[in-house]
Image (cartoon, rainbow, N blue to C red; front, side):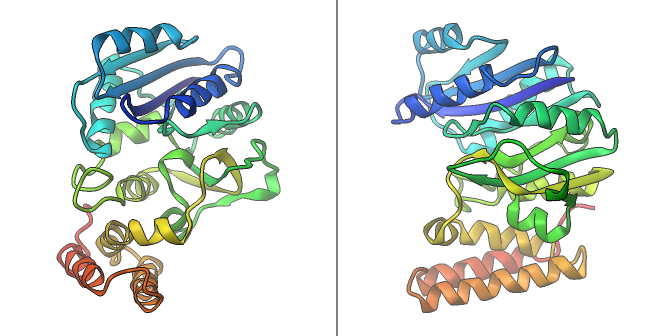
Length: 281
C-alpha cells in the first residue's frame, strides 16, 4: 500500500519543534515495504527554507512553499492538487492530513496499514486523539461508525481515507476552516462526505493519534463553523438532525456559561439557517 500525508505549516510560527517531532514520528513508524509520499506546504516561507526543510525529511516528500498565508482548507486543496497530479489516488492509497503539531506512535501506522490492507471495503477510519496516544488498538475497540461518531469525533489528525474515496469527494470546502470567517468545520464536512462515499467507515474508540484533545475553549472558538456543518447535513438522517439540535443546545449552554457571546451565537444561528439542509447529494 501507499501512504500519502498532507501537512501545512507556517514557517514564521513557533511550531518548528512540533513539526520536527511529527516528521520524526513518521520516519520511525512507516511499515517496511509500504510506500510513502508526504506533501508539505510551507507558508510564509522562502525558497531557502523550502530547500532546507526538504533536505531534512528522511523519506520521500514533496515540499511546496509560498510567501504568504492562506486558509487551512485552501492549503489542503493545493496539496490535494499536487497529489492528483502524481496519480497515486487509488484503492491501495491511504490518505491522511496530519497537522504540524500531530504525531504518530511507533505502533500506529502498521496497524492502520493492516486495517486498510485487510478490508477492501474500508474507505474511512476515524479515531480519537490525545496527548498520550496508545498507538495500537484491539478489535474490541473498533466498530462500524455511526453518523454521530463521524460528526463528533472527526478531525484532520485522526481521519484516514482510502484514495478512491478522496478522488470521489474532491476538495475541502474553501469557505470553512482556519483563515476563513467560519474558522472551523472543514474537517468534519470532509469526513461526512467521505462517510457517504465510503463502502465502510470504522470508528476506533481509542486515542490513537498524538494531538491536543478538544476542550471547552476550542469548542467555543469553533462553534460557529461546526454548527454550520451540522445544519448542512441535518436533513440527511434523523441522527444528523438530532446532532444539529444538540449543537444548537450546546451553543445555548456556552452562552449561559458566558463562554460564547450572545452576538456570536446569533451570528452562528444565522449562518446555520442559510446552510440548513444544503448538503450536496
